[in-house]
Image (cartoon, rainbow, N blue to C red; front, top):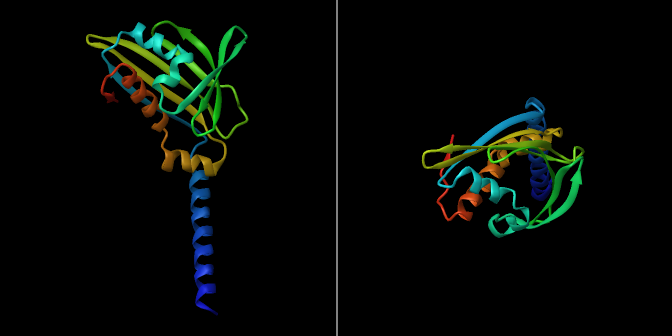
Length: 177
């Protein structure tokens, strides 16, 4: 057997072994997860509330969002689509709104590779407020589940969102747990 064929067999074998590890690892993880991140900001709860509800202006402060499209209302609740710079799109609905301290945003596509919601709680502090995002997510596909947990990380999107929010207010991000 030639050296090229042996190398090819080894590479294919390693890829299959890696795929098996990812599959088994994903199968061992629960479909649902919960993670949270908190930003300490100098802004009042109302200022934070106003910023995160001004969807039309989110592309100005969110580094990952190219544009936002209003999709109207569903059962009296605001629905919008975030169009990301990488070409992906996500439609969201606000299912709970208690200004200026709590809101819940859910993905509208329950058939996608993931589903879930962000619970956003804004608590006043002596120096501003704490903005806590709790993600309650579900990833049905075991390959995506493994990638979500070990490669991307469950808190990555929340960290980016909160870091961008701090930047909107020209603050250094103070992520606390």
